[in-house]
Image (cartoon, rainbow, N blue to C red; front, side, top):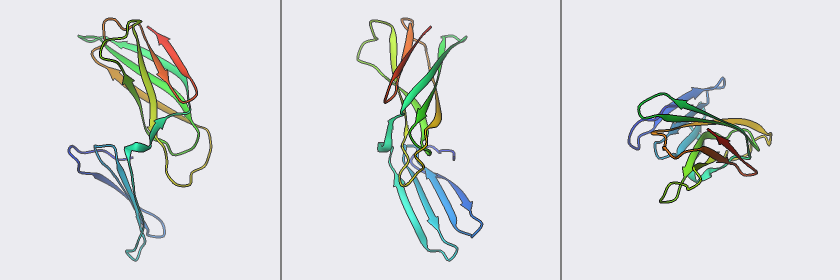
Length: 157
């Protein structure tokens, strides 16, 4: 959608529609983004700030793929494919959750999340993909478990 700059400054994406309305999308490094729609005569018709608080687990996870990258130290590339319950989910991510010590069973757990759309959106089951890099890869890692709202999938090395 748009790139982010350092700090809390937005990097805007500006779109002008056929009827000369202007759509401005600003994404901030703290996870918020703003959307405003301005008519051709300069009147702001919509201005909304969507907080990171709209981040939720996706509906389901379908597949999890792991790849060890040959580097020093080794890194683990993780890719998950899943489903959302509506169109418009953005900023998918895999968020690791751990206790103060490494897991005894060697399985590292990740929440598969994205920012849920606001407003009226088509309620259509949609595909979504997230990736992350675990660097350095923990020596005791034996696999990962990716959690979604309705299910979870474990993938072993």
